[in-house]
Length: 530
Ligand SMILES: Nc1nc2c(ncn2[C@@H]2O[C@H](COP(=O)(O)OP(=O)(O)OP(=O)(O)O)[C@@H](O)[C@H]2O)c(=O)[nH]1
Image 1 (spheres, rainbow, N blue to C red):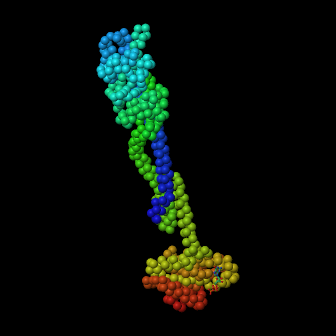
Image 2: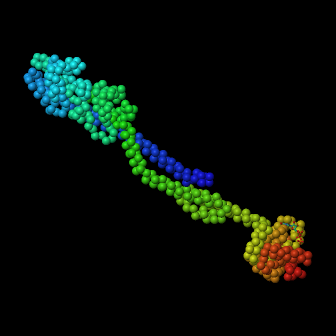
């Protein structure tokens, strides 16, 4: 619990750390998010554009290949127009048509009765074979044609490119048709199939009905994907790009383009999560690259927070230990290097100064008699404690004004006070600096004479008694005092001190009884009449 309290205690350093690190984290996170969003958009836009360009390039190449193939077939049809019935000419022409390029896998020539006249390679259909009704599209339409893909008896998927052969006077002689097997090697299939993507981008081609002609997964060829929104776009418009979802429900970044002569659509697409993965990798790199600076920032913040909070923490700690005698020195040693801390330090030192003055004054007041400024009983006790601690040998004089009541009665209480004050001054001026006068009652005093023998003390007391008697007092002119002397000459303890004071009191009592204005002591029990 203590540890928990320590860790989560709200002090200035923790608050500065919390605030600045919080701000740094929010700023850092915000920048990171902004970079991520910008990069994400950039990456997707770039991928969309790249895929569109690639689809357009493939579509354009396919278009050129099909147009060129149509031109070749048209050229052969023109050549055959004058030689159609010459023996060997049709065979010669379709041989040239197939072999001069890698476009066609085979070719046939059909006459105006839908009978096969020649084939290449030979034997794929018998000469004189009459085409069945469902394969007579070119025969009936009698115009340049690229057929929809269809499946041959031998299981091949193929398209044929045909051109009618017109004789003299526009007489229909038949047609020549070149055939391209989509699932076999050839210029077109290589164009559609051979790509060198390494980033999971792939390409597929659909015919005008939305059936797959080429696809990375050969098992899917022939599958109808016309329900995909992208296919309508690919078949309908020249080229474009969009984010879409494929038939397996996977998000894709796709570009598309159409092949106008065959009305095919070419789609190039890349799974979106693969695009995003490269972004995530990039962002991870950004994170690692910025980590040292971030750590450095945290360390700088920590050090600054420490330096800023240190003077205030030291001031707060020192101020909390008011009873510590070393507190003032601790506060003076605090390095308050900035304005607020420096002002606070000055204020605390001033407050401590004032407090000390106050305490000192109270201390002095509590040990001082307010009328005479002499030590009172409490002050005297402190003095005696010191004597005891130092084993100080001393003598003590107990002094009392004679008939003081008369002073009060005759001259008033105020004059009595003035007399007491004047006597205090007289005594203080009379004794040595090391001696101590205490007011212990109304007009009763004790005078302590350190390192003074009893005999010397009696001598001093007699001189004092005489001096007071000769001193002019306010209004009353003269007063006399009686003095009793006590003495401690051996190693002392408090009992000895009390005993000495009692001796002095007893001697004073004797002096009073003996007629006043005299000194009495154990050494001089008769008392001295001055
Ligand atoms: N003016 C004044 N009078 C005080 C003060 N303290 C005590 N007294 C007076 O001092 C007088 C002391 O009188 P007593 O104790 O009877 O003794 P005394 O009149 O001095 O006679 P002896 O001591 O026997 O010589 C009293 O009248 C007190 O009221 C003080 O602070 N100021």
